Length: 122
Image 1 (cartoon, rainbow, N blue to C red):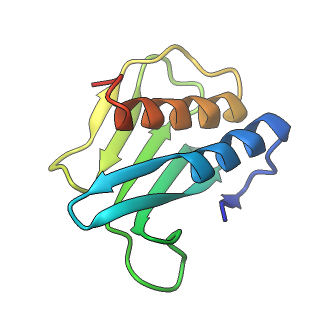
Image 2: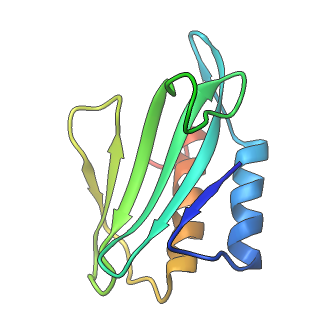
Image 3: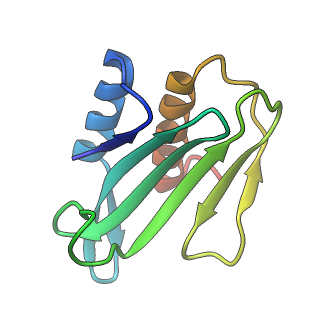
């Protein structure tokens, strides 16, 4: 169900995305939410977005997701990745070490989001 733009994922990324989509669920007042991952890699910016929808994975066409989260990183920049959650007022900056590749950024973003869902990250 994941969508990749400007990037052909290698085995590690593909398995991390599939694992995230199949095992990560968010409890909400309206029921359980499932996430669909969108990976957008360009020369200017690396981004991972997760759309959370009810009962089934949200699609490009269909019901609007309940909320979305987006991680964005400028390649070559040291120290900061931006996280935008549509339930919050403004994006927040997360201090990070440089990513050697887009693949490592994607795996990190999924791990960070899973940690936040499980309450391990702030």
